[in-house]
Image 1 (cartoon, rainbow, N blue to C red):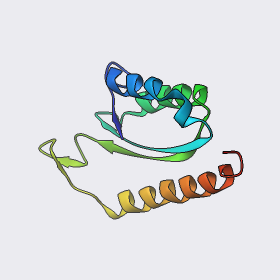
Image 2 (cartoon, rainbow, N blue to C red):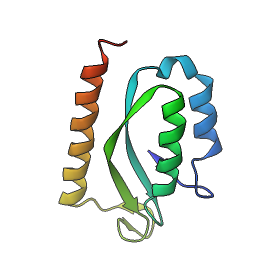
Image 3 (spheres, rainbow, N blue to C red):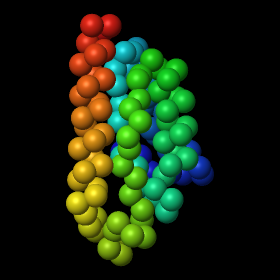
Image 4 (spheres, rainbow, N blue to C red):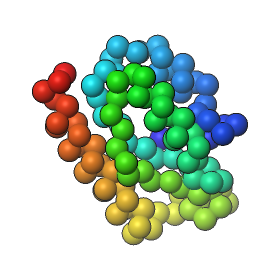
Length: 104
């Protein structure tokens, strides 16, 4: 899960990913992001970063809007659509993770 800061990922997340560089090879990642625009730009940058770490990223992602998906910007109010989208993300992560086991 990532928020968006200055149209990209937070520096702490980038640093954490770089710190354990080798451990990411041939893994898979799915995305849950939140922000005013659902943090889609941060995920775009994160996909590029993860590609350099040899991480396969799935196409589906759950984007949460700070205005419409949270009450007073703090209390998450999930809907059936959120659950359906998250299940799709998980299904894709499991599928790709299974396929990449042979490479690891």
